[in-house]
Structures are given as structure tokens and as C-alpha cells.
Amino acid sequence: MDTAADCLTLSIPSHPCYLCVLQGFFGSLLAGLGFSSADGLQVTLAVHEACTNIIVHSYQGDTAQRIDLTVLIMPEELAVEIRDYGSKPDLAAIQPRALHDVRPGGLGTHFMRSIMDTVVYDVSPDTGTLLRMTKRRSESCTSS
Amino acid sequence: MHVVIESPQTGITVVRPQGTLDMNSVPAFRQTLETEVQRAQRGLIVALSEVAFMDSSGVAVLIEGLKWSRGRTLPYLLTQLTPAVQMVIELARLEHFFTIVANVEDGVAQITQAS
View 1 (cartoon, chains in turn orange, brown):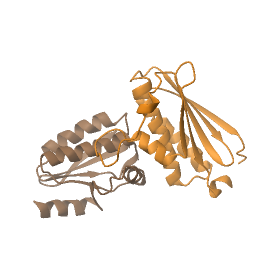
View 2 (spheres, rainbow over the protein chains, first blue to last red):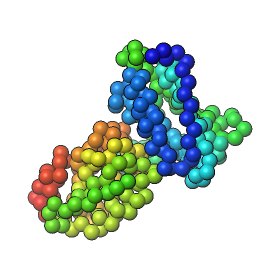
View 3 (cartoon, rainbow over the protein chains, first blue to last red):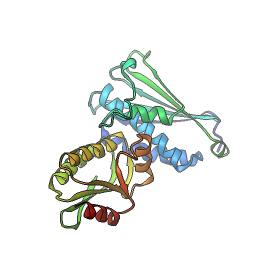
View 4 (cartoon, rainbow over the protein chains, first blue to last red):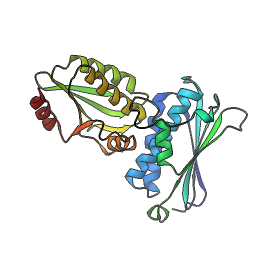
């Protein structure tokens, strides 16, 4: 597969019932790109958590909005850009909770930062937020 | 999300969720788990062999289940973790927080010894 600057897009409604689409989309894509099943599961989880946060925080449960995903496949890394059009996050408040504080909630941000190499929130658009996450591709991936 | 409830021995409940444990399915599973924790008399085992994908809301409800069980001093075990479930529990560094057994039979034996 020629992977230089390939770009895929996916748009899903902001309803939790559509999050399952991400598993099929990213599972197939990442396997095709040569990611191991473990790495593929992790990247899918990071994207899933990001979209869940958008539904809960940016759209505050409004299921009639849209989440646009763009996947950029580059020779050395995979970039996932996730665009929403809801409330902008308070960047100072986006912190993973301490893991020793075992309680429900607050793990999604920890997962995203643990799994991905970079996680950057861009709040400069007039409406909403662009979240960009990247993951380096291993040698086995780049030869696919 | 479908949840199978089994009772391998009197007073011991096995809760077996099937499919995806995420924001969409967790509210229904949470209700089932809470009901079964209250109903179980000797112990509860959550068998996860048919969970193909789990996110942070899934692990959150497993934590809640443990806390409800502790409130009743009821043994609460996890078993048959799929790679997707194992990954999330390890990312959350909860592998020593939960009691994880290899299979339902081991779980039943552990509960029987404790009761």
C-alpha cells in the first residue's frame, strides 16, 4: 500500500450508539496498515474516548450534532484529527485523574495520553475544537 | 448489549455481558450489575469472555460493582478477560485492584472457600 499522505474521512452523529462504527473503521484500517492487534485496539480506544468526551462535554449530551474525523496516513506516523462544533473545553481542566484515586470516571484522558504519542487540542476555530492525536508507525507498519 | 445471568451454585451469580461495554451500553449493564450485586448471596463473578471492546465507562462500572459488593462484604471476581478488557484494566493500572481468576470454576471454588 502506498501510504504517503493518504487521507480518510468519517463523519458520525453525536449519538453514543454510533461509537461502535469506530471499532469497525479503525480496526480494519489499522490492521490493513500493519498495526498489531494490540496497537490497533489501543488506537481505537483512544479515538473512542475522544469521541465520548465530545458527546459528553462539548455537546453536553446533544445527540443531533456531528463529529468529523480525518485520518492522515503518513510514512512515519498516523494522525487522527477529530473536529467538533460544540463548547470549547477548558484546557486547564483537561487532566487525567490520579490513578491511585480509584473511582469511576476520569480515565478517558489518561488512556488517550498513554496510548497516543501526541494529543493536542486546537481551540482556535470559531466554533468547536480540533483535537489532533498522532501515533508513530513501527517498522512492521511502514513496510505494509 | 445482552447480559446472561447464571447461577453455578446456590447464592453465587455469574454476570456475563456480551458485546461492547461503552457509553452506549453501560447504563443498562450498570442497572443489571447493581441488581445482581444486591441479589447475590455468597458471591458474584463477572465473566468477560464475550466483551469484544470496552472503554473507560466500562471499567468505571466494573469499579462500581466492586464498591457495591464491598458494601455487602460480598466476594466480587472478574474472569475470562478478553485482550480488549485486559488492555483497559492494565492501562488503568487496576489489575491488582480487582480479584481476577482464570475461569468461572476457580471463582466458584474461591467463593466457596471464603463462605
